[in-house]
Image (cartoon, rainbow, N blue to C red; front, side, top):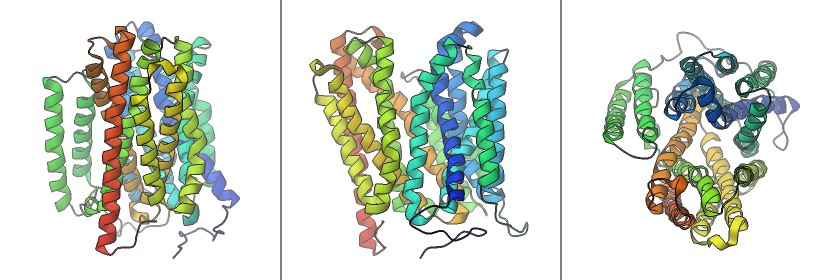
Length: 482
């Protein structure tokens, strides 16, 4: 049965009204800005270290502050949008992101830049979480996959555009322009969102559930401990990393206990007893862990293993996000037509095939031997990610769209954070070198092959989880997922 959200006019299922397209344009720009904020700052780190006279360990917090703010708060802001209204909170998030970008560009001290980046990350968390939540409220159910695929395209474009755009801005106006470029883009996003987002439904104050402050604090601290454990030490685990992991594990248990007793929990415990939701979050995290290997292992293999210069490394590295950008929107249409279950399974099989090829193909094949499996891997990733997100968001209740969207984004971000640490450690261990940047080409090639062999194994586990969850649902007598 197809339902129509309050205060919206009926729309034909075979097409989207112009107003919906303008709404999607605003949501797409929100996603573009959020992902651009991650990728564009990385290329500026050497210049920022020189500008502020700071070591790498200090300037890396320009990236970490942004990622930590997103990872620790994305579920909470999604739930807050469910309670106070997604439209007003998304508009506030765009304003915060744009204002913080200006503060980043004007920061006279490194610590002020880091604080501004944390605020920028909070704005990005709001935009990431609520943009996907709005899809279910504005797009006909039959076109949900296409809309989510469009958001995936903009995410890939933001990731691919960041390094090249950042390099041009640094070479021209300077590093401050890397952040100030968000001002005109943010204002355009704000205008589109203000004019075309559907109004929040009226809610009585007496009927509005409270916000779970204690659960929000516990979840944020738990996620911060986990993210810091994965990022501090740059791949080498010490006593501090282990202590943070233990703290995160204890935080998970305490959080679940608090949520089971809360009158208005941030994440209702029954949600985590849904095998399909848990399976899709787990597979999403595993897939993101694998995709991080292309960003962590790829540059070293291309530079040391194949001997490419920096410009050519950047060009080859951009092939993955470029292919994802081309594939995500068609992937949404495929998911709408053939069903999310089949398409997500196909995506996982394709990813495992691409990772296995990267682990087996000899170095003598050169750039084609790396790019061809990478294209298979990233194309399949777009299929899986679009189908997986569509399956979760398509039938979720209106009162839970924000928090579920936040959980989806959280699983992706935690996968990226985990991948940076785990896949980096596997690569360093497999290369048998204390410094991968100066390791012999043969050692780096061996490290790459073993790393993607591990990636293929992780994808096989993800496929087993997805197939097992679907079979469990079928045995229970519930309708098969579409």
